[in-house]
Length: 571
Image 1 (cartoon, one colour):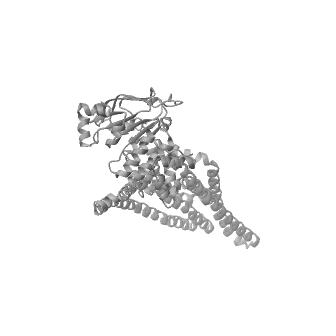
Image 2: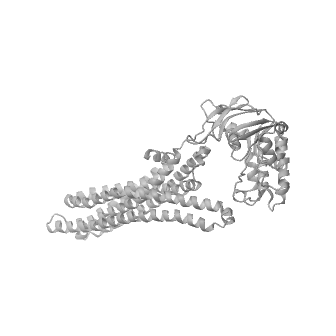
Image 3: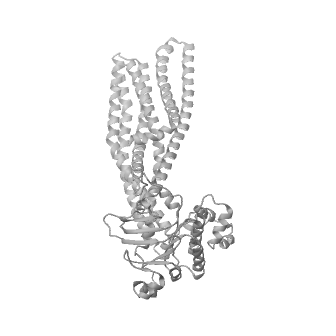
């Protein structure tokens, strides 16, 4: 884990070495001050050597000024180093989750990801800055101080080591406990983020069912869990810091007591003891730094573990080494002996599916809710991979096509339309990021949404709200259809969720669909009879299997399962 953390320093080695150099030089300069003080008291003051005293005081003042300047460099550019490492880690994290398959997002809470990419990485940035700097400063100051102290009095220096060893052992003993405690706290924070996000996104359902109290009680559960984890953590911290405070306060007691005895024995001078006290003061500063660093380090370690936990998850769907892109896609789709289940222990949701969809034809897939219609169209762009069987486009197995190429050539309008929290313009041009204004307008007109957009206060620059909350279902769906018009793919998949729309919206969407289907292969999950009648061919699903197929009129004539669905208008 440490090696993976260090890797993030490599692009910023200049800043790293500047920070470390400032830390080392600043520490060494401070170590000189007690040495000069001892010299001043022991030699020049008894001699009443005014020029030497003035020189020593001037040197000490200059050292202080240089030390302050080095601190400015360390604080500013050290934090910049941490920010840049945080930037790199956040970029890597976001890029990685973009690669993960749908199966991962089916099982993870969004709030947990948000917690990792924001709160966790912020703490990791602090560690990236402070960890090497604090260690270098502490080592330099403690080592330098003891070198000088042993030069003055080996006996008193040896006695001064004893409390230091006790502090180290105390920190090591409680370090692991603090780390585990902080890990529990980070998990509880993620649970709170997830709970809040879930409740806010579903606030309309909450209020519609008057379940505000239920949501409050759910939040109370995760909030109490977080409170308990944090209280336990502070209990461990209280013991840790109390013990460390005791050892720190007794440090002076031990050194002063031993020093007085040695002075009485004639083995050291008063000036030596004063220098020792100053050095102990210098030693306690890095020790306090290490104490604070221990808390930060344990938090940062827990956060970095959560970071690499996600980074180590490999996508289920990856391109093969020999994956190719075709020059052009005509649009013929062949599905052979296809079976699928979402996980190894679950039931098959699709069983032995065979479809032959000619290029430039419109095919409708019908069946009751849960029959497997949406699963089929999720397999074609490789959002999931078949458990058994194959899917071919123009005779090439999609497993041998690059994912980017495959998805660039498939346009999808999903049942639950998602709009980004931005403008109408940005939501439409998501289908073609370099689209011109004329192309944007043309797509909007073809999707029968242009007149509505022009009626908005800011036209194409009108904000749609989170998930398009400011728009109706039909308006959102027509915007998503405009996206596909811009994309202009040879294969179009449409989950026709028009059952909840008014007649006017349905008519506008149907007109757009008819126009969009021309000259391209179209696969529709049908919910309305009008779509079924216009399709060139139909596949009827029941419990994950194709039970009937043919043209609309042919299926009605045999008076089978499709006929009963048609009469009930249940698709």
